[in-house]
Length: 483
Ligand code: NAP
Ligand code: MG
Image (tube, rainbow, N blue to C red; front, side, top):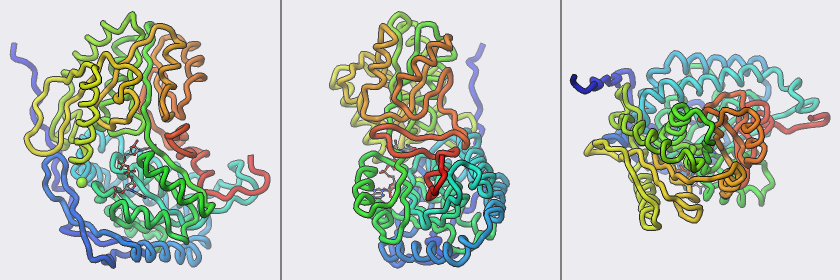
């Protein structure tokens, strides 16, 4: 019998219209940047230039902050909470209506498989707006005291791994609570944020409530350091998070920081192995491992390690790597050449330090940025691949003998964002979850997200929570009687 093969099933890109160049979205209009500079954004799967976007400088940031302040004072502060909710509902519905367009654009600009942008990123982004629309007129009953008030103008900075989804995590709660925003998307993935600006126009959101300024790290720094920002919300690396923490400490304004991670996925010997293998694969290879809460360290109980590894490798040989727009693709392109270089450098260190590398056999496209699904065995806690965030499709595997040893190893990290527990015993799940120092703990599943569920980390993984009631609180000045 012939080997079963998948025929190509490419999603059409005709649904998106990418402009040759883009201006900044300030005060409800697209306006040219004061800097007069543009930079390119490419499709990392082909290296094709998709568009040129504006590079906002300090003066542009200032214009955007002023537009947000004017909108706050003149319209948004006077808009009744139930009216605010209507705008959020409207945005959510438009995102659903234009979901295919957003999914294709996200996959083109980011390199992630269409299966994920279509089934995870875009539906969850819409869900965030629906969820927060429901809160807008109920804030007084949410345990935040008598009269919870918005902070004012919020500066928001997001990374490239879930561009539209991170935008929705930021903008939906800010608007629901009555703030206005200036948001800077990441340099390599600005296009869905710019399409979202069109959605704001389509929804007739009052001018200046949402401002989107594209740029690089210097634009982000100018936004964070702007004197008229009332709060900062940042998702990105721990390194930049620390710079932001220093900057806002001087001014005493609040911030939420969602930073890096080195999540441990613990598989006990009583776990259902096939389900655990599936969960481990999802935990590290979802979104090419460009996931802050990825299960990037696998802790295997020693007596099942050999059998587990055989099944894991077998499963990994079935991961289809290639064209992100193909509906059969599991693993897409690495987001940038810089990120690919970082993944290679840390993986090389694993080799040099004595761990054993194994990559699933697969043929990688000649153009673009690619890395095969990879595991390291023989990893010790001292190895860099066990300590540092790789942010790519690379799993470091360690073993343990007793549950206590598993917990000690899992917690032996400067991060504390996520963890996973695989066992058939409910009592072991509860025991382990109490010991693990991680903001999000999944049991017999992994990488499940919901707007109602707070998300965030301990230690160097950040400050505060996003999502749920906890996330709303971060956008409010909380008064008397708060619980
Ligand atoms: P990054 O370099 O920190 O960049 C994040 C954002 O900050 C980008 O928009 C970036 O702009 C901007 N930026 C860079 N330098 C800045 C500065 N000095 N001041 C203000 N903003 C600045 O991180 P990344 O490499 O894009 O993203 C990967 C990291 O994000 C990983 O560590 C990952 O774990 C973390 N992450 C965390 C979460 C979470 O929820 N905890 C979620 C997703 C990702 P440019 O793009 O133009 O450089
Ligand atoms: Mg791009």
